[in-house]
Image (cartoon, rainbow, N blue to C red; front, top):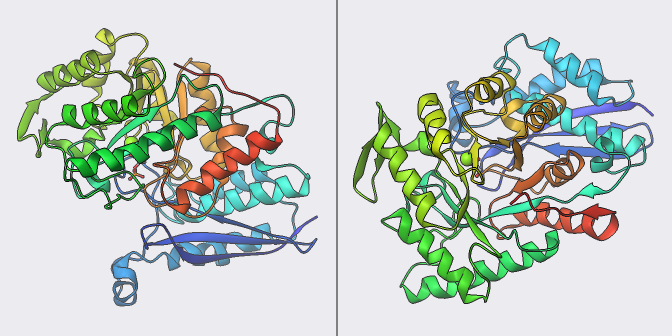
Length: 422
Ligand code: 2PG
Ligand code: MG
């Protein structure tokens, strides 16, 4: 079975912004489409999306955010190599690496490479008559991931209604993925009712479907979510705990951390104390990007005194980049990594980062972006890679539901195990 045609074209993400899709037609008449996501709080060290800024044509098309150049690169540079061949993920990813000598794919665009890499992976799974998850784990029980789900959104996802980007929940007391999702969905429903009692505009949802309820202090936002967990009859800390994405690169300016809603300014040392107090006083089991992407010192110092059971997650810190992960391991900067395929640009290289992290006993959380599509490949990757955890935003919005629903389908049809990392 061979590739007859591959076409890159522009589509819209869940925020209405352009992103890249690639459709691959196989000689058996089937077609396989992959669409790439895009972030809002983008780390400086991520692989580069190619966007058409600058030219008069581009400025008229989606205010310079169109991705026609990336699509053209698929159609003109990549397609001739892929045509007529068996869809082989490893070989294609190797070729894509040789096509752009830069580490961050700035020439052809990581949005072009990832679209092709994913479409090839889907087509290869089809050619081998297995699911995308099974392409990576052909045998044995699949590991269903623990979901980490957004209840409140702030920061770059919600016009800064809150200083931190997400207050999330992890239902680690649940016995299955579907039970965890059901508990979390109930918590979100109650958050709408309880938020309305506070007079909050609970019809306003953020980019990832979290509620954009304004809270001046982070602690108030967390207390609110804790009270929602209790409202549904679950016990904070035992059944469900909090997680937080501070996304603090967004708060960091010239050596200080600024929290505009709280009206607070911290130097690195006092911000570490602030984060330590949050951890001490709240049922918080996971904290992501508590410090800025290049503030390595704060990460290592925090880890020295952090409770051993706390999951400390690097997102902007690592940007799914092997070299940055290796530095983080060497400096004991964290004990977990957020894994986002579009920060990296290739499926196989993303998996390499995940495996390198797991080899050092890091927890791994496969993650969606704030700009998503109806595609559900992330669910298959999380399961097939045995990531252990997944972050997809909230339970609101069909681009989020697509991933949850694919996980529910895998749970309904596969042999699986569900083991809490907490
Ligand atoms: C994050 C992601 C997903 P974005 O920071 O973890 O929540 O956000 O896609 O905007 O980078
Ligand atoms: Mg993050």
